[in-house]
Amino acid sequence: MQLPRSDDTIDLDRFLPYRLSVLTNLVSSTIADAYRRRFALSIPEWRVLAVLARHPGLSATEVGESTRMDAVAVSRAVARLLAARRLRRTTARGDRRRSVLSVSAAGMAVYREVAPLALDYESELLAALSTNQRAALDHALDALTSRAQSLAGARPVTTAPQPRTGAARTRRKR
Image 1 (cartoon, one colour):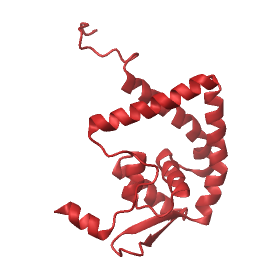
Image 2: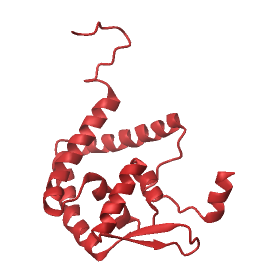
Image 3: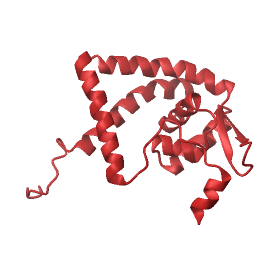
């Protein structure tokens, strides 16, 4: 049985959030096949590893903020990466209540093998676009990200969130 069409029915083939989600899932799962087979690494684990390879010393919460991943997914990925000794957890110097994460030597070895695979896939994917189309896509993604943040009332996404100090966290709780 098909629902009657009305003006408020979503045409998923044209609905941008749906299309972006499908594209993201397709791209992520295609790249993930390579590193899942070789390293038993999940998509969330790779994302955590990639963020921390670029920005060591973040907390799990800050990794989640940076990637916009669900806190549970980040927590599970961090736990698995710690168990596999691909990450190290230490206490922050200025705040003993805060733990920070960094990529271990074993994790960095995995990162160095997976990163070229991901970059090659990106190159192959972007080969479908001209130089002008790539620039337009980059500009459009920046504009859409900025607008989505504005609509959500969210603070801007940064590639490396600034660590919160104990005092800042205390003030925020009040």
